[in-house]
Image (cartoon, rainbow over all chains, first blue to last red; front, side):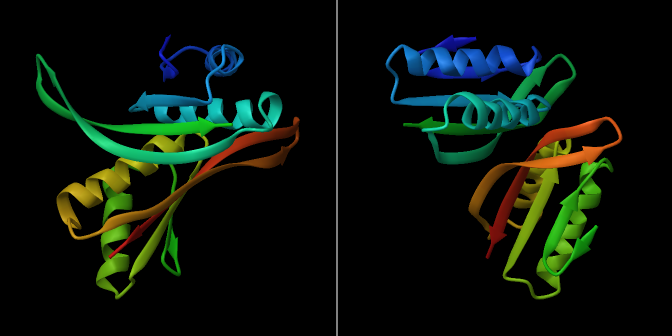
Length: 89
Length: 89
């Protein structure tokens, strides 16, 4: 779920990702990148908002970027939207 | 769904919102704001990405902000995440 200051948001409950973000900062990170694709994008925004409002009130959003990735599956290529939110101290 | 260069993304198919965004630009807007709350956030990102990649390749993202709104329902207050994406020429 996390590696090197990056938290990948998937289908687990929001609080799992909030805790992962908090843990990264507690481990000394000055910046944590929250990434998600497709339907998990909403959950990534939730995780950032809960982190900022409840646990990490001294952090700010350093940047948000959205994009498109091509995924290749057995049914052909599929475009999926992505989001990257950078949270910093 | 749209007023004054703002497109509110809800639960309809993505293409509805893509067409709304395209229409705003065709009506002379230099900037269109795409807004969504809760689970519709992923769809808003999809709508922006499809608009940019397929129909409005000369536009760019001028800003993305996320936030939290308090909604009051019969079951009490509830926090909901929001997103605002500004697309400009």
